[in-house]
Image (cartoon, rainbow, N blue to C red; front, side, top):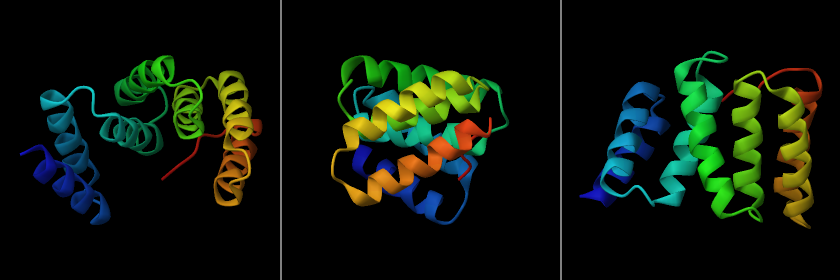
Amino acid sequence: HTLKLTAISRLLLHQDDIPAAISAMRSVLGIHPEDVDTALDLAQLLATTTEISSPDAQDALDIATRLYARRRHDARIADVLATAYAANARFEDAMRLGQRALTLAGDDPALTRTLSQHLEHYARNERVRR
């Protein structure tokens, strides 16, 4: 059941049906709250598609904070937390975590490029948009 919901959420996201994708991801997490990949995808989606400082932006921050507390050495999680900070207009925190993500990324050129682009947004007090 969970695999089907996960596949459905990815299909809905691919079709740009953001509200339905968010709902499907929340359903997956309701069944399997420890599903890190779905939680991370949901946090990123909420942080990059909602209005700044909205309840969904706060949800993104809450989810990403919980994930980061468990996996502080994961560049992608640090990046999503930075993105969630920016979605909540906490740009100094976004810069700090974005720089941490960049350090954690090591020699991954694609990830490093993406993280550098995110840092440019935070430096301009802008959030990352989907």
